[in-house]
Image (tube, rainbow, N blue to C red; front, side):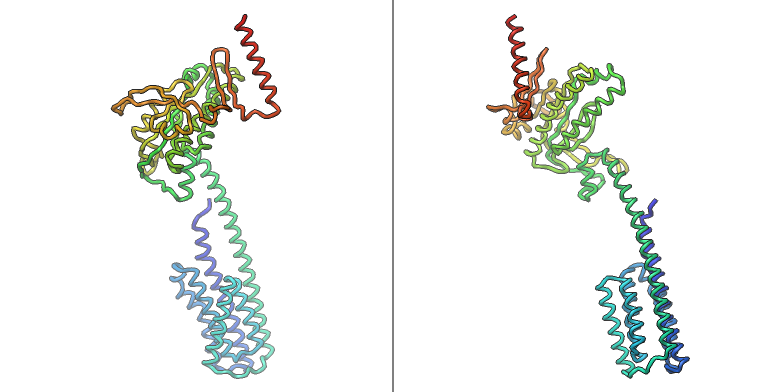
Length: 462
């Protein structure tokens, strides 16, 4: 299992340790080079001060910076690197800037700068190095450097080479560790994404997306919003469950709910719950097209569900199921309380209120194949949808009888040239969507209709 603190531990433990070792190695090169210079009588005994400082400095800054690294790791690291640059410049100025040593130490310190930071960080470190050299010249003055003895140069060259080799090794190991962490983290991210996709199937996609995008928090809170509420169920489905095998019945139900859910998501509905073969869907939260847009989307969804049910009946008939199942639906619009209900450990995103109850009552009063809507919904969709008044009904929780309206179809489909037609009676079933018929099939469809009409007329005459 991936530890989320592993990356932080790598930054807080591995990097400071590597910096500490690299700093010891770098200052050790200065110590050995200076000692060889003293032995060769190239430097005076006062150079022992440089040796002492170079020996103590790495350990002192490592101890002193420890509390700062815990709170400000990156800025502390950058500060110490700039300190190294300044001190290196002072050291070179103290040695009277011999060109051979300047070149070697510039290679070493610049390599460290490049490994540690970006081009900008490297540029600022170079500025610090030059500043240190300038400060050293002010403190010690400028004296032309004497030729460097070969032992001193060879010692410095070997030390710088060793430092570069160790730095390259540490950088390579650090890169491998970072790649390992990256691959491990990437694998865990993919795993968590797969798990989140699994979990998302238990909640509405809109809710899941709003939580993962940060727009919504998983906490107990509700609000009042004007929503469009939809209920549906299949007439005669309970009786069918007693006649079919459990496996076949389950497959049929899952197919129905899958297809209807796909239609609901197509129109932007938030699927609240499945109640056996029934569905509860609402529009207006967490996203909304405005109350009018939500109402039109909901009614459009219901019309497509009714049409799709005819296709499902045809498919089911082909596998031997003759029960003429039909869907009934109820739609209402009004203010509801929407949000998370339950406990801190287990909550349910849903809606409550008398408007929800009214939508459920409309569904129960609808005839098979019928879509009943309330007056509030009718007022919002009547310019797009043809509706027929269907009397009034007494509903618990409402003082006066409520007017009911039946959805017929889109006005565009029931105008002078309708593209959709549906008609059913004993011995006859017609489902026509003329705008979806391919051009090459039109003559065959027309011939089939004319043949059917001829048979009906002949039977009447007989």
